[in-house]
Image (cartoon, rainbow, N blue to C red; front, side):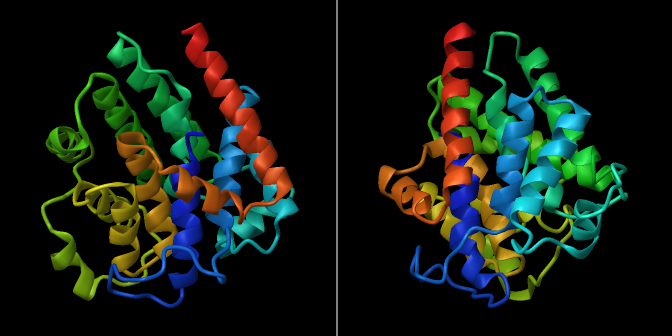
Length: 280
């Protein structure tokens, strides 16, 4: 059920978005947890891909699910776009483009033609971003998050473990996207504050994964930074899922926070991915 990692991150981080903590010691799930706009738009991106993955598919799906869940916690400019008749982007560099992109990283099946596969993922990621976040940083953040997922999927498929793959991911992200991934979480955490930009979220989310031991630890790392906790954890969760998978008990807990329309998309997504894998 690839993309559940991002949804888990959103649900776990939802409690701390406006009540930041700077520790990894917290209940992973609690009664106040909920899904937010990160989950809703992740589901929308998945449906858009299943509908063809063209520009209009992304716009239609985002407006459809955004209006189904009007109180999910959207940013001001996105909310204005969502409930308007406009189908034009508004030059955003916000982290919304990266928080919703994880389905793209799982959509294209890794093949022997690495370049073609990476180009396809990059193109889908850019298209999913550009419908709203057409600023270069907004597009860059979405592409980086999706390609990080693809990178870890390739390494896992090749038999490499997460630890032996992380140095490669760090180098790839630094060389291709220019992200400085040298600061550690302990160095970032004390001064890190709420930041809605891609450039102030995506590198930190990648670092949360790079310093993790397993899926749960990655989510805890992301939330412990503070800032836009649910979005950080959603981005980290997508990468961590590609690297480690998600423990069944965590999947089951997250499933319990979703309603039936969202679950229905996840069921269709799972069937579609299975069919694509068999046909590849």
